[in-house]
Image (cartoon, rainbow over all chains, first blue to last red; front, side):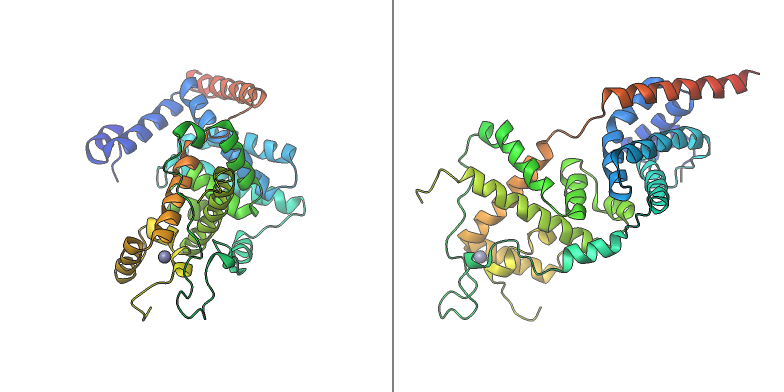
Amino acid sequence: MAESGQELAETGGTAQADEAQLIAALRAGDEAAFMALVERYHAALLRLALMYVPSRSVAEEVVQETWLAVLQGLARFEGRSSLKTWIFRILTNRAKTRGQREGRTIAFADLATAETSSGETSVDSDQFWPPDHPEWPNIWVSYSRSWGDMPEERLISRETNERIHAAIAALPPLQREVITLRDIEGWSSEEVCNILVITETNQRVLLHRARAKVRRELDQYLNMDRSDI
Amino acid sequence: MNRDYLTCREMVELVTEYLEGVMPPRERVIFEAHLAVCPGCTAYFEQMKQTIRLLGKLPEDSIEPEARDTLLHAFRNWKRTTTGEELV
Ligand SMILES: [Zn+2]
């Protein structure tokens, strides 16, 4: 692994160079760099903390402690993981400990099993002809209508966004967290598996089920007044 | 998978696996072949891709001003202590 920011810039591409620069700035006490980091991750840290501890005020405390631990640990940070992974791992360790002390133990592995093992399907079963249908077994009864012809303003309108948010809010906790991290905040599957300590397969199933429910909600909403097929 | 086809009912469960690029090559070929001839699955697949695109356009949650102020304070304190130590 390259040691200096200079070497990183030459060998590791810009992402790593940016990271090295950011770490150097933080260590040098660059207020803007720290606050940019806070802006970027604070809300996600708070949301994750809430999965482990029983109340928002406790979650806020844990996130606050996490940032202090980040500042105190910066000098010792060796870059074996990304800065982001390091910060979120500090958070989950602290939140877990705190949650246990508050009498709340939550094993994501168990939650993942629960949220992936039920027999839910992406599409309601009656959308397909039954498996024993003589001509069209397991084939669509009718097709979903494309949103491709809809104006972009409709697709990204406040009302549509509210529908998406409502659909996400209604998801089971891990599905909600996975789709938020992956599709809204742009994390990689590796990062998500790492922080939530779930397997790659479980992560994918959780993501798929979450996306399928958001799609269904969007389809009902967007095609609600278009029954003319 | 021993069959050389996928049903529509199976297709809808495999979209994320396909998009994540983790589907075994043989199944990938079968998935794409089905998609090429099935308007129902094509519509579903397109809607899933649109859903992902729209999710990516949502604004991320942001920090509340009070929490921001507290952290700015904490940072300035931390900086004062650490640089103080270095200067002594
Ligand atoms: Zn099909």
